[in-house]
Image (cartoon, rainbow, N blue to C red; front, side, top):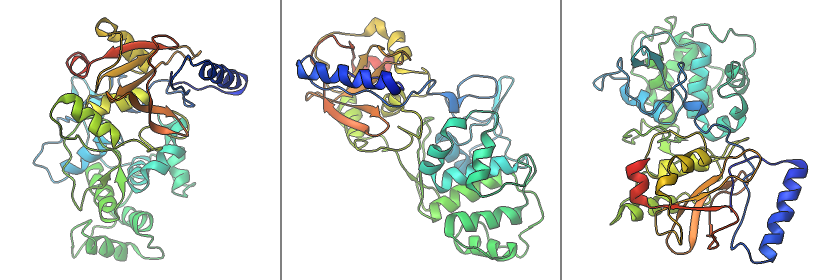
Length: 366
C-alpha cells in the first residue's frame, strides 16, 4: 500500500504504527507511505494560460534553426516551456533573455538535481526567480533586466567549468575552446543575449561539462551528443512486447532518489508511470489518473507492465500508482528517502489496492 502524500507529526506517527500493525498481522505483503505531497504533479509544466504543456511544438522554433535542438532539450526537461499566445505556442528565441530566465536555464543545466531540490517549493510561485538568484550568489540585480553576452559568458565559465577571475573576452575565448560558442574576432560582448542564444550556451556548456538533466517530462525525441547533456532518466527500452519495454525501462530507474522522481518537497509517482510509458503530462495526481481510468481497472493479480492503482486513504487524497513486473513485485516512487523502489506487490485486494490497468489498455486510453 503506497500513497503519494505528505504526512507529518502525529499523522505520520499514526500511519507508521498503523502500517506496522498491518505487517505484523500479515494483512500486507509490503507497504510504505510516501513522504512527499505532489499536490499537482504538473505544476511546473503549466503555461501562462493555465494549460499544461504536453509537447515542445513551438510555432516560432522551426527544426532548421541552429538553436532548436537546444530549446528542445530544455523543453523536454521542463526547464523552459515557452508561452501560450492565442492558439499558438511560442518560445520567443529572438527575445532578450532576462536575468531570471538566464539563471534558471543555467542553474538547471549545471546542477539539475540540486536546483530542483533547492527551488522545489517556489518553482511556480511569483517569486520563483529568487531561488535562482540565490543559487548564483546574486542579490543586487534586477531579475527582469537584460543580460549582456559578456556577462552571460562569465557566468557560464564559472558555473560549468569553475573558471573565475577572467574578463568577458577571455571567458568567451574559453567557451569557444570548449566548443560552446563559435570562435569569432568580435564576441559582441555588449550586446544583450537572446533566449535562443542562452539555450545554446547553457545546454552546450552542460554537455561539454558532462552534466545531466531529466528529459521526457515532456515527450520529445532527444539525440544525445557532446553538445547535449546526458539524461538522468533512462530512455525508452527495447522488448518483445509493450509490457517488456515498460518493465525494462522501469527497472533501470530503481534506486534513483533524485529529480525528476523526488525533490526536496514532493514525490512524483504518477509522473514516473506516465514517463515510463512515454506519455505527456495530464493528470495532477495518481488518484486523478486512476479515477479517470477506473472504467478499465481490473481486479486480481496484476500482469507484467500493468499500472497498479491504490486508493487515496490519506488526508491529501493523492493515491499511488506503480508498475507491475509480473514476478510479484512492483516498481514505483514510494518516498522522498527511498525514491524509486522495487518491492513485493500486495496480493490482498484491500488495504488500498484498487486494481490494475494492463499496459496495452493504459497505452490506448491514457
